[in-house]
Amino acid sequence: MTEDGRYATQVKIVKQECPDADDSEIVEEFRRYEEEFLIPPEDALRSVVRKFQTAAGIELTKIAAPAKVEKKVDRFSELDPEDRNVTIEVAVITYTPRIQMVRGEERQVAFGWIEDNPWEGGDNRERWDFKDWGEQGENLAPGSVVRLEGASVNEWNDKRSLNINRTTRVTVLREGGTPVMQASSEPVEIATASANEGYVNLVARLISAKPDVIVKRDGSGELEVVRGRLGDSSGSIGFLSWVPLEHEPGTLLKIDGASIRKFRETPEVNIGDRTMIEVYHDSAFTSMEDLSKANKVSISDLRNGMRDIEVTVQVESWMQRSFTSEDGTERVVRSGDVIDPTGRCRLTAWCEIDPGAGDFLHLTGARVQFWQGSPDLVIDEAAQVSNLSDAPWESIDPEHHWVDIDLTSMLSGGSRRGIRTS
Image (cartoon, rainbow, N blue to C red; front, side, top):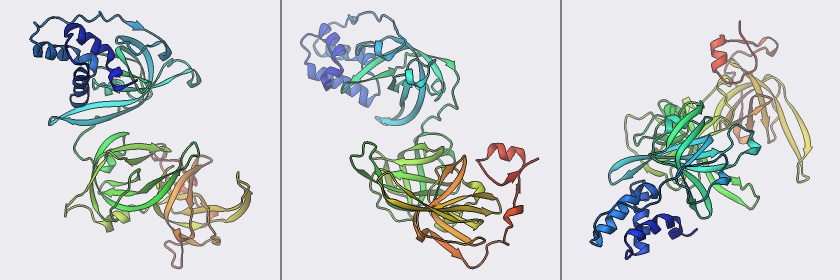
């Protein structure tokens, strides 16, 4: 659908009241209301008609718009592009709020995914994008099932989505997870940002950054990205930048319009082309030295999806095996069990290292992935490993290494091995 076609229904109604109005000017006015005031075209109709009637010297009249007849459906496939008073039950998959400045005033909108046929399995559902113009975040928590009354269909470039307008009634039929926090233009601490998904502003120090590539799902090529870690006094968090990052580690940055996404249940800052990044100056901000210490973790701190971490472990066992990859290449993977005073986990190395039982290894830039339900440390290059000559703790006997924790800590913590409780 063309840009003009996007507002075709509204343009037709305006022309009924103002026959001499120019179509392109009408389209531009609807676009202005939507982009500057965040008002969808169906809600802006009365104001647009009034403007063109006044400009043409026409006596102001009531809009001769057709009555909004409710259209109650069960599936998205039953909807047409012109439907403006839709009632449908949907499952909320994601909800992402965002703050936009409109003539010096903060306005909040949100977008995400919804699925029809919410009471059936995922194979029988269709997924659409939606935009929330009515600040309904409390009722649209991911995982919930809701009934929408008074929603409208939007079509753009042959793709349909649903508008949840200011007048749309949202009824929660099944509670979901924790409501997504409302977006704010004020910077928040990393600990606060990590608790929810959505758009955030941060002031954080760049701890590390290195280029990486992501292979496209269709195999058509690679995307160049930058991965690294940010920190403040409340903690640290990994980031993924889809745009070049021209700052050195240690630089204090003000980041506006980043988004928090969870990768394997681990929050990560996503930086895109709409994110604003600038150098920030604050002499009282936590130093790079203190932040680097905070980036050091123990086995009990490991969570699936963590990247660029620093940890010291004692080797319990080590082995290697060969296998044939999908492309027919012979590869070797090395792995074993490792321990520290807080527990035990596995370590996998995609590089040539051969430590002995009892050796102490210091790992930098390591990542974490789950293996059989518990964290697995992974390293890709031998340069990430240092074999320590000075023991960081008294050698641990693996046969009798059990970490005692209370039941509350076990339930609220991550997956761990080598623990016991009473």
